[in-house]
Image (cartoon, rainbow, N blue to C red; front, side, top):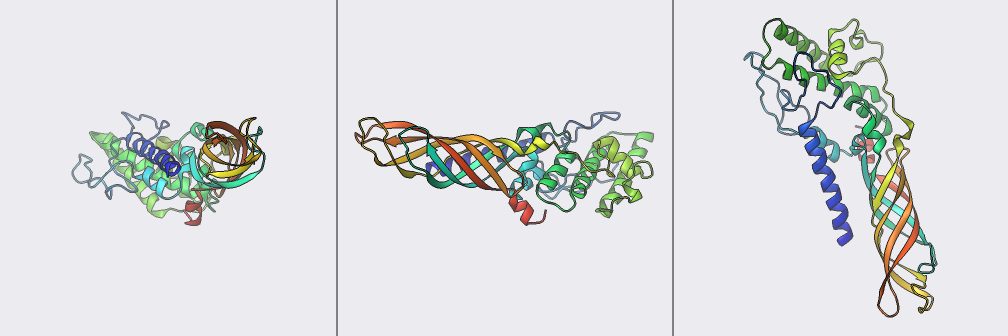
Length: 312
């Protein structure tokens, strides 16, 4: 129960962090200012979950919203098994371990819930690039389509935000861009080579390139080291032959793992290979508690496989 509580608390903490990130900075750090702040923080047009976000009232001239609610995209990613775009995943693994000293003298097998972190994802510039790499990681047949959809949606958010308080020619131009990008959003997905994806011939595609820095014609680029990271987990209790102290006889002893950590490699959305060390408490014959280290090898199923199986 204590182990499950720790893992559940860690996942809940990650969920809260992602929710706050989605609510506070949905525009990322790669959006140019235009004539003012392009931070789509209080997004004029909300997408995804969170209160049924509606479109701006174009007739009012003030860009006011209907509906709204922040952080929907991040929470949807958590529920849909798309944590990897934030450099995080979780899952359950089967593990094999062997003590590095006499305390545990046999190989044992068990299970372990884990959280894995892949820091290289944090250096992939732009949410659209991360969406592309996440879709590719999950085996999506059209990762460019997933990234294009997000880039167009984010561009609309930015345009509606910029429209607030805009006047004259600036407002007229933003209205034209909003109309063009809205039409493009309705037309997605489009096949590669469609002129509507070309910034040189499409005002909507040009707006996406300008405000989201994403070229709808091109595939994304993902660094090869993105699959390497670290993990933390707590294996299940086990019994193994060993000698916790020199005064103990070699025999079966109960081990209570406290933590396992090390390197994680996730070549696909489905699996993670874990290599690390586990620290456990073991009780000797005189009922004293001692620490014991073991080398650990695990094969896990990532939470992101949910998104893959759902075809997202």
